[in-house]
Image (cartoon, rainbow, N blue to C red):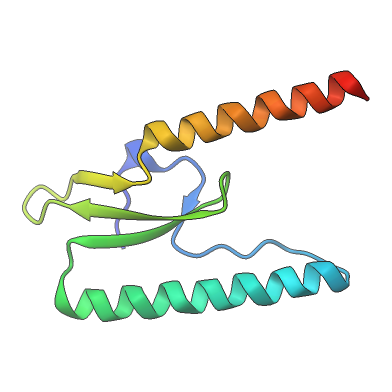
Length: 103
């Protein structure tokens, strides 16, 4: 899988956070299931089309889909968009500032 250098902000094909404890173990199982489903979807689509990429964004914890131009290998469309991910990050930062301020 190829990721353009402009789109490499903590995005990986598959990511597993290192967690411990019973709640973390359940989270690990959910992450493992998500990763297997993502890999299965990627494998199935790669057989049909090499113009789709499934990526995992570490900051948002969301799976992203990118449509890639077959000739130039540039990203044509991404869901969710970079802007939507940036807005989500900004809201998360504001929420953490509010919680820290209130504590």
